[in-house]
Image (cartoon, rainbow, N blue to C red):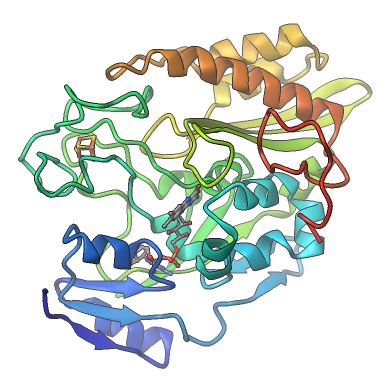
Length: 352
Ligand SMILES: Cc1cc2nc3c(=O)[nH]c(=O)nc-3n(C[C@H](O)[C@H](O)[C@H](O)COP(=O)(O)OP(=O)(O)OC[C@H]3O[C@@H](n4cnc5c(N)ncnc54)[C@H](O)[C@@H]3O)c2cc1C
Ligand code: SF4
């Protein structure tokens, strides 16, 4: 048992001051961090409990039409917010496809963004893992790696980022609001997660003590509400992380794609936005040929990192399918199995 300090600051300023100490970590709902501590994978010397910080649990519509999601908003509360789900259906679908109902009731938005990889070797302290123990090697390279990355990986690490909700958020140009030692700043969500390079231990662009305050979706993101989907392929139909996933959003005008957004999950150490696919779709009619070409463009740089070459073709097909479903129109109600491409039946009460 490792000993650690536990503090529960009353304000954002106190939280940041407490978390600036070496070895400190923020604790939100703890659904990831406490598991990592129990497995001896994370050994924080100080837990800074932010779960009761005031003002971070709100979903607000801003005067310019953007929506601001506080870092402590629970995954379930956001997915079941009727106005939010209607305006950003792919985000709601992604949230409801993640984890289990119990976990979604606890898990926070900030924690979801910051959750760590699900690479099995990262969780096994007997294995070599550059992310957990820099310089120790990567047992996944010659090991069980069929779930690992096919884009943006390096020799040092081939892990993927496990978040579902980050995928549509990246597609819709979400912005992350951060407060740290040097004050407030913001960055595109797309810039939050890092590719591994030679330093896979550092997952994100955050500095020690940086606290995520909120995630903001710009007003323009609502323009995709009528034609947006999130599709997730997993090894069992629920309660599993993505093998590959795709968020597809289209703005159709006069039977033509005026603007497209596409991001993939389960393929890299970050949600993978494909602007090449988006450009391939702009100005085209929404048909199978356009979707197939977009899927080719999205995976053009993909290469296996082990026994996972199959994921490349799987991802191409999933992208084409997600685009076709988005073009057909966002359903009034989410399917009974949210984000599952195998689901044909409409469900009830999955979105309020
Ligand atoms: C069995 C299981 C299945 C799951 N399946 C899925 C799935 O299919 N899809 C999916 O997307 N997720 C899945 N998850 C992950 C789950 O969504 C995350 O564990 C959860 O979102 C983390 O939120 P939390 O509030 O519990 O974070 P915590 O565990 O409290 O924190 C996680 C990390 O984020 C940091 N952190 C938390 N809040 C902030 C903040 N505001 N600013 C800066 N850093 C912060 C913490 O320091 C810690 O490093 C699953 C989890 C489990 C246990
Ligand atoms: S893929 Fe990354 S997380 Fe997995 S063992 Fe290798 S270094 Fe560790």
